[in-house]
Image (cartoon, rainbow, N blue to C red; front, side, top):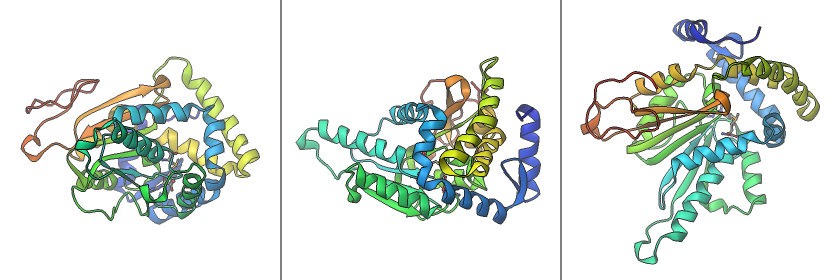
Length: 304
Ligand SMILES: C[S@@+](CC[C@H](N)C(=O)[O-])C[C@H]1O[C@@H](n2cnc3c(N)ncnc32)[C@H](O)[C@@H]1O
């Protein structure tokens, strides 16, 4: 009843963006309406966002984010950008991993310590993040909090070693613009990683997941956050996000190479990965699943 996937899904995405209308959950709205709605949703959910994440996912979001950072394998001294970073869940993990890498590095190889930038459009989410950082004893000087849209990042070209976006990209109005910006700010060789809700691939799981999403989640939202509507939007926006393959193609269209994805929890979420290759290798295309980007130009391969 609620699932909107496959061909119909892709059709809606294309026709909507062409006509300057965007999906906000199941609604078709103009750009400024979507931005306003998303802004209101996250302003409303910000104070209870972290509790709600644990409740709604049964704590699974922590494992998914751990896997994201494990895939990234942050190295000592890197400059990392976490876009739509919200209350800092991913950024804190990346920062800890960088510091751990720096701690195991010998003193003779010491360079500048790595840093993490959290970019988010919503000041209420960033405020909650700053409070959390303080409560977790994370040094404020280790993190930069930047209020900005993913579509227009205020960072120089080729200034970041890596880029993550976790459960954020589906809320961005112009995803192609966000991908272009991701590609622009990454250094050659830099890595893009996206953790997002995706299409269930395990038979039988979809019905259970729909039932849970459309009945239980808005009720938890009503009881805990006093706001069922925002959680209804979040559930709808999950259903309207492109499936794994379509999203991989959009990442590739933005110029990333070695694009691949990993399904987690039966495809409830997926991690997409891509690299900005050095200019000389700009013709290289998709990697095999689980592989690294090919070192030499290769013909376009089909999806994993
Ligand atoms: C579901 S939260 C995810 C927060 C965090 N990344 C996490 O995984 O817990 C989505 C975040 O995307 C942010 N967001 C929505 N539209 C955005 C945009 N155009 N640019 C940057 N951030 C945006 C929201 O403000 C919100 O903080």
